[in-house]
Length: 262
Image 1 (cartoon, rainbow, N blue to C red):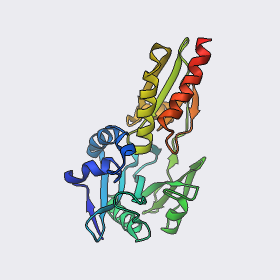
Image 2 (image 1 turned 120 degrees about the vertical axis):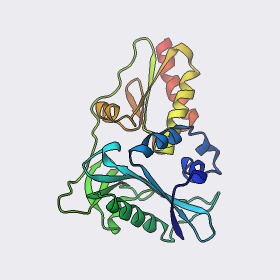
Image 3 (image 1 turned 90 degrees about the vertical axis):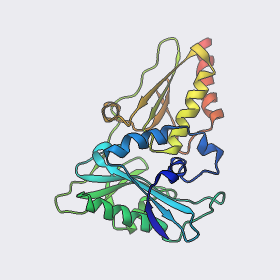
């Protein structure tokens, strides 16, 4: 196994989160590439794991906390560490120490860049990006909102624990229309997929639906709303993890349109 920095020849694969075999991943659109182009000038770093057969089997992305979706100072933040776990494509590469190697490489790089510590997005439930896995790697809980757990590892005594950005307000409906609102940051393929499906579904209802979007890779927009990624229909949140299907999103919008037309 070899840990390498992201190079131009692997960018397309990275933008699809290593799922180049997946039509669903390709449906997520250009947001990941746009986010990368914007954030690489602000300190975003990406490392890939090349397995012993030469295939890219894992990835980690991390950036200065000041440009991330959390609150903190002097830290780096890992929004995603991913080892390919599907049977399709390059196959299931979990259980080979790839995640540990990627995390160690990100930590070493952050230290070399002068960070006071590093934080990571963990999930309390036993699947993708488990908080319990980070705990085994020496991380501790800094904050949590629902099932999202903010884990961190300080490098220096003066490091201050980070916090999640809290929701500050929600979108309000547009009179006489069904209002579909999408908040999208760009770093997450799954959330980008939700955005693309919602935008496409909303367009099928014509003038009955007002679609509005907020790019939360803009820090001021993120802090104004306190929402990094999310979908709302007439101000009500839609569950987006895992990403709802196009048919489900269109069905939810359609129900509101029927009420509007009565």
